[in-house]
Amino acid sequence: MDGRSNYDETISRQYRELIEHCKSHLEEMDDTLPEPVEDFQTLLQERGISRRSFLKWTSATTAALMLSPLFRPMVAKAAEQFSRLPVVWLHFAECTGCSEALLRSSYPNVDSILLDTISLEYHETLMAAAGYQAEENLERALHDFAGKFICVIEGALPKGMGGKYLTIGPKGKTGLEIAKEVTSKSAAVICIGSCSSFGGVQAAKPNPTDAVSVGDALGITTVNLGGCPPNPANFTGTLLHFLLFGALPPLDSLGRPIWAYGKRIHDFCERRPHYDAGEFVEEWGDRGAKKEWCLYKMGCKGPYTFANCAKVRFNDGTSWPVMAGHGCMGCTEPGFWDTMAPYEKPIADKTIGGGEKTVDKIGAVLTGVTVAGIAAHAGLSAIRHREKDKE
Amino acid sequence: MEAIVPKKEWSAAMRINHWATAFAIVVLIVTGFYIAKPFTIGAGETVDKFFMGSVRFWHIFCGVLLFFLFIWRIYMAFFSRFHADWKDFFAWTDWKNFMKQIKFYLLISNEKPEHNYLYGPLQALAYMGLLFLLLLINLTGLILLGAGYDAGWTHLVYVALKPFETMMGGLAMVRWIHHILTWCFILFIVVHVYMAFWYDAVFKEGTISSMISGRVFRRGHNE
Ligand code: HEM
Image 1 (cartoon, rainbow over the protein chains, first blue to last red):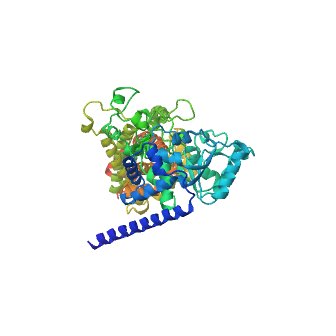
Image 2 (spheres, chains in turn blue, green):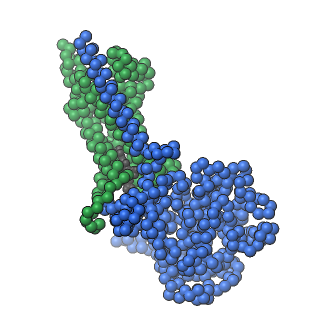
Image 3 (cartoon, chains in turn purple, blue):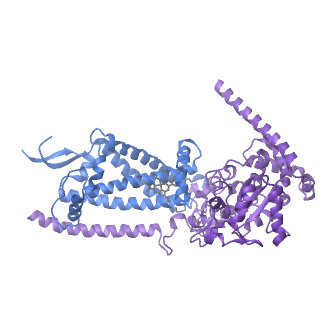
């Protein structure tokens, strides 16, 4: 009895303290951050997002961040502050797919409006400036917001040839140089996508440019939003967490926020009951595919992948890969281009040394050879030891 | 008078451990291959079926059983009151005898190698390898188990083993290594069973029945 009430008391005290911390932090932000360019509530109205939809989004985001409903007003407040957080967005070795996914979603929900208002001090794809002018913008941002801005990085850093596989801007600085300079002045570094988080496709075998993740290249701790591309909700959620508490969310051992990457795809998959039942799609477009059975045999890597895709989904909760009918490719995991192959077959069909040799084929041949050897040995032993017995 | 007499070779604990391990491994191989490449259960309604679920249950049941059997076996190697055999696993360090044993197995020489340890030199090496395989398959198995169960001791074990998972290159690689190890077990079993029969036939000491009765038959005095 006593222990129970003690426990409850501790929990409510911790909540009170956390809420206090959150409130005072939000107020502090009010004073220190630059003024917003547009009022967020007006913007929502203009875009046709009702108050009701905004509240719904607030509840969903609060829950996704694993916070109690008590935090809803603060999440709403943080969303209003969103556009005031200065962001410097760097591009290295990548395809810009993450930017595309984040900024051009066809369903304008609150997440994408937040991303439209984001205060990008520097973003190579989106800025109007070019050449020396762009360079000046970056320098000004580093000067004006030193220690306050968030550095978002898209793309891996090639280390080969002293980093010269990647040079950017009129001064021909290498990616390594730029990354070192900018991250040293930022409040936090968020790696967006598999490339900056874990190296991505250019770090896949044989990795000719010796590309590595930002964390590995610079030896710093980064928030790694794995995914190819990652879910916009995971990016906005992480920034909201920073606005709410002035700190980055708890990370797993690979630097991924636990609130988003703490659980396996497989364990929250809507097709999971079909896995447990033993109902599998055997071929694209077969009866099982029409009945939305489990995609394990079509190479789904959900059992090896940690992400919240099944819960949060993409494009305003419309769909996600497994729902659309293709297995998960494991894109939130390090080195997935190599470790998750073959993408449309179970992992047991992984081949060794190119070609067609799978473990099962090699194993069967070895077993066959062993059995043949045994048969020969048994025959010879029979002759040899019979002779001996006769002696 | 010297005669061929029964001699106790294996304690009851060792025999139980041996057959329980054998049983667990056979079930694990069969269920494991189903998990790796399942076939579809087509008939019936989804709600009435739990085939993969049951296969996984038995795999995990036998897996955890194997884990405890492994711990027990290691314990016996050091603390068995009948015969703690950890030193016998190093019989292969006697290189002269090792070569003799190879010649004898390859039917080149008829000279029987000395029997100084519980195991022959090649046998000791193979069993050491088996213990290593068991360690690895338990490790990878517990990681695969813990990844799906976010509660209880499986979770605690998973947190402790997470660095190994990262070292191996993620869960997919852990699963693949687990699969490769499965084939190592199959190869071991094939050779192990053959060698047991071979010994039985060539030495005529009752090798096969010894793992049931605990006794081999050797020249010597009655105990
Ligand atoms: C001789 C011992 C064992 C054999 C032969 C064996 C075999 C296998 C095989 C072939 C697979 C499928 C791998 C693939 O997808 O390619 C598998 C999966 C698995 N094994 Fe084992 N295994 C053994 C021991 C263990 C142990 C000791 C444990 C844990 C305590 C374990 C737990 C698992 C789990 C959890 C899976 C994955 C199941 C799933 O994700 O649904 N196994 N095993």
